[in-house]
Amino acid sequence: MLILRKLLVVRGARRALRYVLMLLAFAVVYALYTSFGGDSAGAAALRFSPLSALAAKNVPYVFYTALFEALAEHRPPAGPSHAADLADSECRLEGNYGLNDLDKLQQLSWHNLRHCYRVSDEQFAALRDSHAGFVRALDTTVLPRIDSLVDVGSRGIVTVGGARYSVLLLTMLAQLRNSGTTLPVEVFIPPSDEGDDEFCEKFAPSFNARCVRFSDILPPHLVSSLDVKSYQIKAMALVMSRFEHVLFLDADNFAMKDLDGVFDTEAYRDTGLVIWPDLWRRVTAPAWYDIANVSVDLDTRARYCYDDVSPVTRYQKQGADARAADSRVPFHDLRGTIMDPASESGQMLVDKRRHARTLLLALYYNIHGPAWYYRMFSQGTAGEGDKETFVSAAHALGLPYYQVRTPLAFDGFHHDTKAFQGLGLLQHDFQQDYALHARIQRQMQARHEEYARYDPGYNVEASFKEPFLKQNGPHRDVEVDVMFLHASFYKFDPWTLYDQDCFMTGKTHEHLRGYRNQRRYDFFDFELFNFRTLQRYLCNEDSAKNMRAFRYLDDKVSEEDWPRMCKYIDEHVRYLEQHPVEKEKH
Image (tube, rainbow, N blue to C red; front, side, top):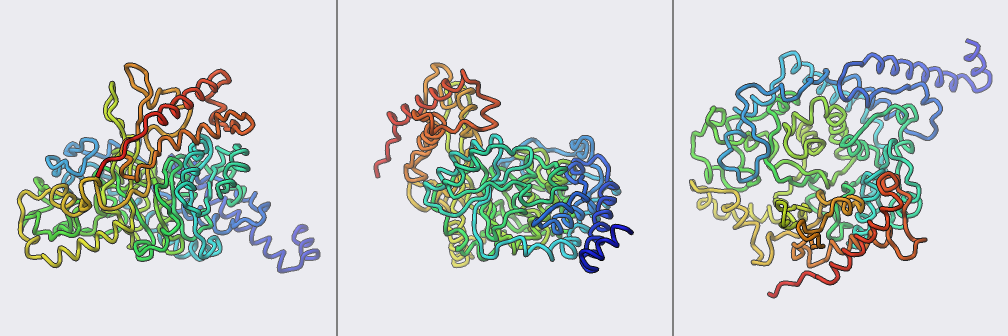
């Protein structure tokens, strides 16, 4: 009472009351958080000491406290010790499924997938209730506070830096500006990876980018105890960004054309969320649709993989039973499900105000992903992690999104002692794809009777992609441009490239060219550009221009190894300059 009396005298009744209420509020939040123990992998990310937030100044701690209170209050039950135990003896899943694995379609059916991720009645009820509770909390306690956290009308690119990612951003940011893109960039640095001051203070600003530390935005009590890792960081960065219109890019994802106009496109304006495809079929468990209260019509087929334009009668006989044990109808071809293929989240466009609920539900999926949702969405297939959380969140909330139909392509080479090295994923121009999709719809409608006839030999590659997506002559794989090159294998991390003898033959240990599909991006020498960038900033003849103050490189590269690494980079630059790719004769 003595403290309260002093506050009344010195600061006035209103201010005193506000401080008392704040103390009480944080005491309640503290009690709530400490009551949520359990062994869920998301629990560690939710522990904090809220009383220290009183020291925070100019930080939107009210919103983030409400958000993490909702994440904790509606946390699902502890996850299984071994996710594989959720599959019963009738499950038949065999790794990854390509878009044309026609002999395995039965394994993608509802009948099979429901055997591959089964939860108990008790677990199902808890998962369903916690999911519904969090969605309710978004509308009642979290969302009313979010508008003040977005700069209305702002546009920009969001990425994640720190540790190895800061090194990867040397080439990513250089190519971004080389493409003609001028959008500002926010580089989010998680608490565990702070410390690359030279990168943040010199390199990033020279490319119209700025580092954003979690401590710049989150209350101190959250920063000190928040334990987000790996895929969870991307979801946090998207929530914390001040941009209203966001293009997210992984640190190893490169702009292959000017991106300044992406937010002015019809595809973006119509939906506010654009998702790109992965290489594989989708295997999301039917259980998720029930947990998220998403209605699926198990008796009605809506499409064949990414062909949602052809009449269903073109590829399916009347009377096919999608629920039958011998059904060859993939579950994700049914009405109400998310369309194939799976998602690849190395790039994403999102309107934060329009899709605020999407991003917050995606954060929920990521915080509780290791315990439940990552496995539920991907069932142990390639790239399991955050990649399905964003499209799944939008789908669960009934919000619009556009999935790029044009399948991804590869750039790479056949190694002399190893298999094909798929170095980069080529993702396509979403607006060109959107316009092409609309044109195909018009073509199908104009010739409906022809395409409605049953074709027993229908194949999505030969019957849809080849005649409709490859219409621009023999020198182009598809009609739409390459917009992004996701260098997910052989990342442009100079130490790893040198240490693992990347871009070199196995038998003779000679340099070779890895990226050979340059016709897809107007014969721009992507590989040479990136090696020159590494040479310029890490191995410059003028030692004063070298950037060596990276925590990641300090840990990896010894004083003796640094000149060897630079020798490798110099030699590869020289090799590429002496062996350019010849342009095809038309």
